Amino acid sequence: MDIVKIGKFIAENRKKKNMTQAQLAEKLGVTAKTISRWENGNYMPDISLLKPISEELGITLNDLLSGEKVEKEQYQEKLEENILNTIDYSHKKVNEKNSSIGLLLVVIGILCTITAMSIFPSDSSWGGTYSVFGGIISLIGISKLTHKFKYWKRLVICFTYLIVFMAALVVIDYIGVINIHQAPRFSYLKIYNGQMIEYKAPFYNVYRINNDTKNEYYIVDTEKKYTPDTVPIVPFNRKKSGIDNIIKYKNKYIGNNSNVGNLLNALPLSEYGLVFEIDSENLGLTVDYHITDWYINDNMYVEKALVYNSVSIFSLIDNVQYINYNFTGKSYKIEREKVEKLYPNYNKINENGIIKDNFNIYLESRINDNEFIKEIFNKLLV
Image 1: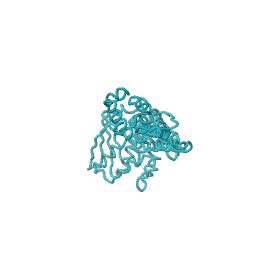
Image 2: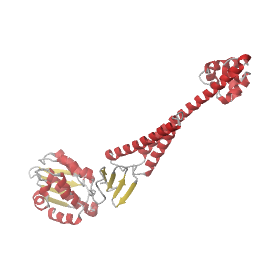
Image 3: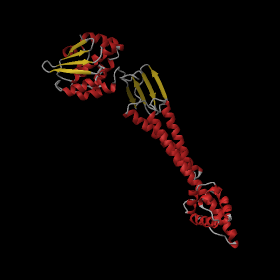
C-alpha cells in the first residue's frame, strides 16, 4: 500500500471538489493538520475513515486504496490486491500498536518497581508489594512485545523474564541489606523477639537488633549459622563498636589525638556526644559525656558501656594508665592495673596482640550478663 500515492490522490480529488483541508477535515471530524499529514504521505487514514473519505471525494473505495482511478477491466484485480494490502496494513498497525503498548508497559512496570524500592522503607510490605506489581505490569508488556511469536515461544520468554526480574529484585535487595544495612524487602517470614527482629529471606537470614533505637544494627547470616539464641546481641551498635571495627584504632601511644578521638567516637556512649583530654605526663585519658548518667541507664546501659569501653581502650592503646569518665551528674575512674588483675581472662584477650575471638568471648558475650557487669563494675570503677 503506497501511502504517498494515496495522499496525493486525496489532495487531487479534494481540489477537484474545491474544498480546503479545513473544510474536508470538518466533514470527516478530524483536524486540518491530519488532512495535511495524509496528503503529504506521512500517515495513512484510519481504516474507519476510508469509506467517509471516498464518499466526500466522490471516488470509490477501490480508487482510494489504489491511489488512482481504477479502470473497469482492472477493477477486480485491484480490488483483491487492495483487500490483501489493507489486511496486511491492518496487521502491521496492530503489531505496531501492541509493540508500543508493550514497551510502555515494560517502562511503567520497571519505573513502578524502582519508585517502590526508593520511596517505601525496606521493612514496609508496601515496597515489596508494589515492586511485584511493577513486575507483573512489565511482564504484560513483554507478552505484548512478543505477540508475533508462537505460543510456546512467548511462554518461554515470559517465564524467563519473570524469573530474571524476580532474581534481580532479590539481588538488589541483598546488596541493599549488605551495603545500606537495612531489613530485606523480600523476606518470607518476620519474627519479633523483644528488641530483635529476625527476617528469613530466600537464601539468608537477617537479625535486626536493638530495633528502632540509636544502637540498632544488623547481622546478615548468609551461612545460617546463627539462631535467635546464639546471634551476638549487645546493647550498643555492634557494627560500629564491635572489635571488627575498632581494632583498626590499635596504637602504642595515647598521644595520638586523632586515633583516640576516632576510637572514642566508635565506642558506646559516643551517640550522646563527648569531648576528651589526654594527660600526656601521667598517660591518662579524661572523657566528658554530654549527658547525665542516670538518664540513659536503662538496663544498666552505663555500667555495660563503661566496662566495655574500658577493656577496649586498655586493650587497644598500649600505654594508657587510667581513664576518667565524667557525666553531668557523676564521675568514674578506672586504672589499667586493676583491669589487668581483676578482669577475668584479660590476658587471653591481649595474648600476643589483641585476639578478636577472645575479645568476643570474654568481653562482648558477657556484656548482657547483668550480674557479671554489676560485680565487675564495682571492682573496677570508683
